[in-house]
Image 1 (cartoon, helix red, strand yellow):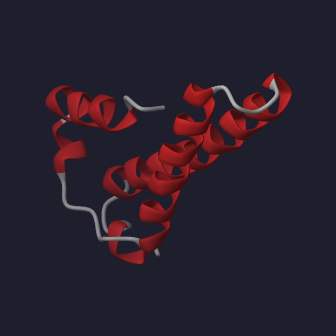
Image 2 (cartoon, rainbow, N blue to C red; image 1 turned 30 degrees about the horizontal axis):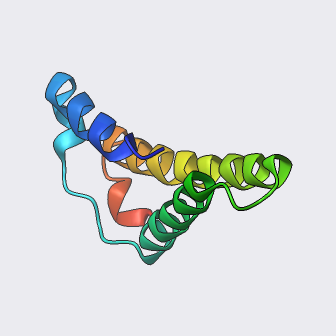
Amino acid sequence: MGLARYAFVAAGWVLPWLRGPLPPRRWARVVAAIVGVVLTVAAADILPDAVTTAMLLVALGLLGRVVGRSVWGLWVPGHVSQIR
């Protein structure tokens, strides 16, 4: 999860349409903060493994949704302005 941004940028080198501008979205910032906190808690190993795994899966799902919406918005012409 921590490498998602770098993977997105690297994909833009191969697929130029991924380099387009994205509108700022508050939800994407919230998800980035959630992922950061979850990764920190997971690295600290302070919770039971089952709870940590559940948190990681939820954070991964949220991140996947944000990245997926960004990719979709860049792939479908004119869709970026409609994403909120």
